[in-house]
Length: 339
Image (cartoon, rainbow, N blue to C red):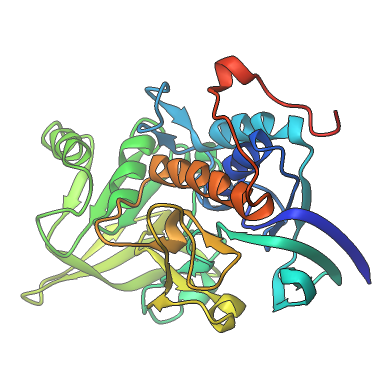
């Protein structure tokens, strides 16, 4: 068993966890980062690396994969230690207020503070209840888009009415041969501007809208689709030619072992104090999508702000009574931890 000690143990290597490394580094705190995925980036890397993101300050548009690359470069000067492809399976308080975290990779990390930035926790797609769907998954039914060119010149059916369904319809319209969007109601749950763009493309004949319809069945053999069968609320059934089906019905969230750590939970979220992102357990903080409080906006930029708030609070926990003179990064620069 490998035992390592650090100032802060960060659970989650998504965008918020990576920015937390930077913010903690600015407080001269060393970090170990644990993530169940075998790569950094969380959902940005695993689910939509080529999806453009429009609400990162200073970047009118940036691909998710490029955002993660930039965040890693920003964190690199602070030399974080990554433990990837492993999950924290146990957390216990030990002597002198320290925590001992044990991972599925047989690594033990001893830390005074734990910062949970686990996004939606362990996640997986909500699968449509279609008979025989397993035969097509990974061949012609996909829940994520990792490389847009894989869908070039294909007849694509996109099912769903949220941001993912609408955004990918817009992103793939110039790559696919044909896109049909299936949604059970006329109104989408996406950003209004994106919905307007989708409907404009539909008016121009560049995207077909099958509304109000729901997925009813699959037509194909040996894992290769030939058509998707849809049904309206009135019982009208039609067959849509399709090479690819992309069902975007959101993610199934699972906190995993985190649910058993004595934290105050609101269903699948951790309740925190919005002023510093502390939880009800002293020494444990939570930021990003996994953290909740009244009127929270679930945005990446909200998580970035929470990372900064938590880092300053964590510094006070690790160095109680020590006077800290706040400086902007333009004044302080990037500190060298080993100096």
